Image (cartoon, rainbow, N blue to C red):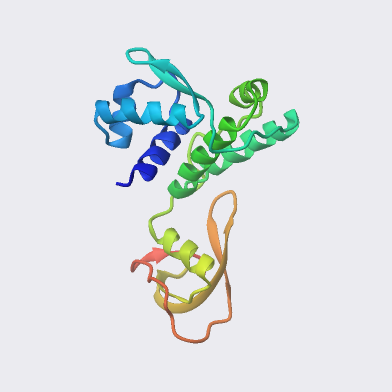
Length: 203
């Protein structure tokens, strides 16, 4: 792994993991030896990252040199906290992971007082169960939307009949209990990935 990629990976791990972060936890997360980890932390500090802590006590990323400082109103902070928490409860593992990463990046660019407001936001969401369960096929649909590609799908319709279709996915729609794919007219040669046989979805 290139050194720049390794430093970025370490920085991202420190954004996401709850402080204080022990060197052992960081080394496991970034797949580095302790010796390399200590050297990379020194490199990040030399580049301008404010990293509190030391060996044997744990570390905390206080100020992220890679991201410019930002200021949000307190209600904006509450909206960010609530929105990202809601994304995390939707049942889409990829989006849940992205929401956690995005929240860590926002925390990293806030002044100390705003950072504490975000960490202790009073706007919360509670769902004892995820709103839906999705499998890996949703990633294929998402990629096809981004790249504007046709997608061949095999699915079970509402009557239980196995069906095949070529669609042009436009976007993913999330409701309280399900996710749907909004599609356009189909034409041309499908170049996207196929969903797995037997998957159910309102396409």
